[in-house]
Image: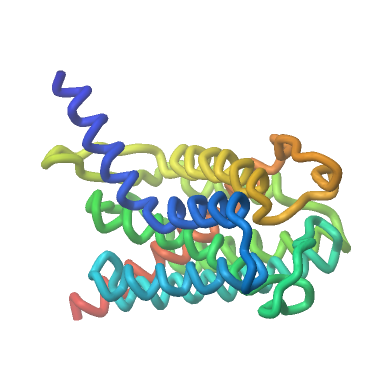
Length: 256
């Protein structure tokens, strides 16, 4: 019973940490089902997500520092979306006033929701890092993974080389977290894979409700290729490395 209770508590904390992503899915579903007579769907989604972000900060569910991190991820994600849409990887076929180079501004919030989850889970589960690699290793690795999303269109795709490098760099790294006063630990690389798999499942839900559209989903919706899990795992790694680095830098500042 102790193990079951801990699992339930852990699941509850994870659910609370996913509040922003859940709001995104609910909004996608609602706007897909209910006709919208006044505004294009993409623009209404942007308004909903902005209000949701404002409410989370105003209510104390997110701090101002976390808002800064989430805003950074919004910009990083929007830049990636603009490039990928330009390369034909996926598209946003619906009309909208608030679009940049055929990409609606709300799309950045889907990346920001990953950062929101990481920040929330970090705080709620009192996450700590064990044997975290040096700063001069982590930053170039995160930059290389992010840049590969762009460069593989013009050069070879080195994602699997980068994934191997991640395993080497984080081989002895662990993440510890607390549930009801008891601490647990997990290999950091395993946490990357689990979060990436969860996001792939979420991606299938998002495309089903028309958040964006892959070329093979133009005529009818189909499951997103399982190979996309690797892309999401790498994106999770970038997200986690940025959040962790900022947390550690802020911790050192506080200690000083």
